[in-house]
Structures are given as C-alpha cells and as structure tokens.
Length: 322
Image (cartoon, rainbow, N blue to C red):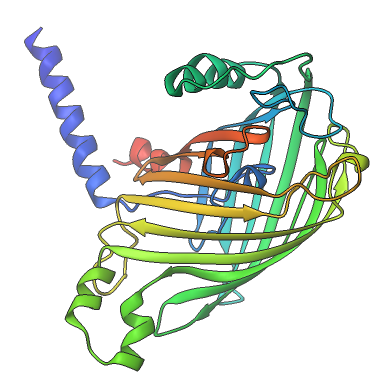
C-alpha cells in the first residue's frame, strides 16, 4: 500500500513539475464551432491536438418557436484533430488543417441542455420532435500571415480559409490582433506607464473581423443557410505573460464575445443574427472550452457547445523521454 502511494506521489510530482515547465496548449476549432461561438483566432505556434468537440443545434426554443426551416434538432459529436505548422521557408506564415467527424445524435448534448443546464437555471426544456441521425464530418483550414505590430511581437494577422463537409461549405477571409499588450500599443502615445506594463504582464486583448461566403450541404441545405456571413469576435485573456513573451504562458484563461450575422437564414432568406459567449482554460497538456448563446438570450439554432482537447506532441515527448 505504501509503495502504491509512493508511486502516486512521485507521478503527481513529475506531472506537476513537467506541466509547470511547458506552455499552454491551444488549437483552431473545427467547423461549425465558430458559428456557435467558439474562439477562432488562428494558431501562432506549431500544434497537434486531438479530442472531442460537441455542438447543439436546437430546432425550437423553450416557447416552442421554430428557429428556421430546418425541421430537426442535431447533436454534433466530432472526434477532432487540429494541426498547425509554421512555414520555415516563408517566415511569418502559418497553416492549419482541422478535421472533425462523428455520429450526429441526440445525446450527450440534449441531456446536457434539458436535464442539466435548463434544470440548473430553471429554464423550460426545449421540445424535440425529430433528431438528425447520421455520420457527419467537417474539414477546415487556414493560411495566415502574421505581422509585427507595436513592437517585435507578431500580434497582427490576416488569413484566408475554408470549411467543407456534410454540414455546409464556406470560404472566408479574416484579420485581427492576437494577445495585444496595452503597454506596447499605448506607451508610444501616452509615454512610459508602470501601470500599463504591470497590467499587460497579466492581461491581453484580441479581436478579429471575418467575412465568408456560405453554401449549403447535406445537413444544412442552401435554403436554410445564409448567402454570406459577417462575424466579429473580441476577447480578454488572463495569464502570466511576463515582460519578454519569449515563451507562451503555462496557463491561460480567456473570455470571448462573438457577434455573428448568422450561418443560418430564415424562410425569407434573411440571415439570423446570433450573439454568443465563450470561456477557455488552456493548460500544458490541453485545453477546455465551452460556448453558449445565453449571452444573446436566444436559446435556439446554434445554442451551445464545448470541446476537450489534448496536445499530442507534448504527451508523446513526455512518454518517450529517456
């Protein structure tokens, strides 16, 4: 018994030490998560992560009002892999490929929606008449150019990307800022500020705008999908960034707000706007993130989702280390 506890203590100590030395993990989300509210900035560093992504499409709200012409609810359950590489021959450029596939069925998202979340907050259960049952998949990718702004860090980006699969198709362009330091941005105007420097060691800001052309798929037909999409996302992240940013933080907590002109259209062809919130916790061997339309008070259509991802590169290095 003592030897077992000794092994547990040694393993825990090893993991704590190794996790303390490694930067936090992150990855680009699989489609359609961005239109559900997931944090969707491009990756800056080389990554290879895998895990599960869940999204819930809700046909009716709690009052029984139909969202649009889609006459079924859907629980999208994707096994997901996301891979990002920096292009060594082209400094400042990165590429990402993210793939997700799995069974579309009621649970676990319907259970979490009606039996957990709505019960917890005292909301009415949403009615369900029909559930989509199929195997769905999505593939999305980006090509990103990073730029140094307000100093020597690459905080500006411009991307071209696509999403394609059984749900819908999209071609998009996006640009924005990632983990902007207020000290770096404002000190050239206001002068040296001890407060700004101290604040920026722990708090960073991000934002992007995105435009996309949309086309229907097997699950979401042309008549139910908007012709084009405008999306804005802003976020605040909290971590120990330090002064130099030579190494990404070991832990990071990020809060995001997304306003989306809408992936979906009403029967007259007008896009259905959605406002969504997200929170992500990143740690050395992976990250957790959840998103929800509760901030917009809509509770229909793209309602909520979450993902649980692990960093395959870092786990492989730890397992194979001598």
